[in-house]
Length: 359
Image 1: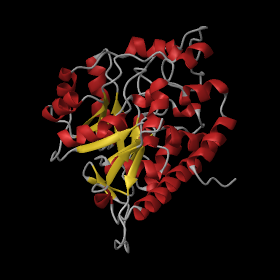
Image 2: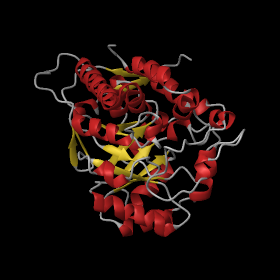
Image 3: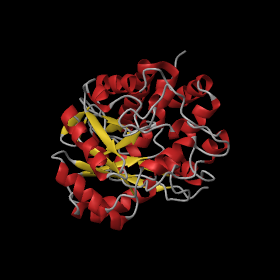
């Protein structure tokens, strides 16, 4: 079947995944207000295109964390990808490598980080802070030794948000899917009605990160450290003062605090506050097409993270499915960039935007 947009791949993924695996991927926390708001906020933003520009020889390439990317995009960290396809993270990482964009390995990957990094390309490693600081820093060291190019430190998960779909499903990992990067025991596999085994597992393993945790990570590695999950302007400023090489403006895809503001609504203010800062400012949450990437760039982002759509492709067609997602995003972004009168990502940063008052 020909897929002409990401919505087609979303439907294909839903058709092949079990109900509870789909809910694990698609769901948010609480009443899912923030999950829905991410899309609504993006849909209210409109770009002011320019005309009569020279567009011959335009490019959609960008520089992210000191390296070239074929698109101003990285694949976001997503846990337990073997829930969606037997090859899991390996298939997704190969597709990202071939597409020329970074792939972010999750602490809770279902394949050991060393095996994923060995695929090649531009692997980044996402870190959750564990109760045992030594285990956290060991993961950082393993990622650096494996050839990862950055540490993406998720700072908005002191514990997992209440994800009601998983609780209603009594969601638990099958025996064939494990937290491959550390010995997690049986907690994530123990099914209990009305409770999420994954949430029970993370409650045992995770600890709230602090600014001292950020300092510990930076002291432990020579890799650039990116802080993911920042929404407050004050936190963004403090991240810069703490030596962060990048910030991901994100409400965790609506999966943590239900009611947290969509990242796109804070992006412009954070970008203005950090004007002149040389680090990366990335947006995560709700990106569903090339036009959304253009909006993020126009509001001050240097790039975006894409999570759920990559997993739709993984579920629908494995490595080829993820490649289709990234190919579609490339085609759509190139089209949007040119129609906006821009011949490069840098030119898109000079576009104006307006917010619709409808809805």
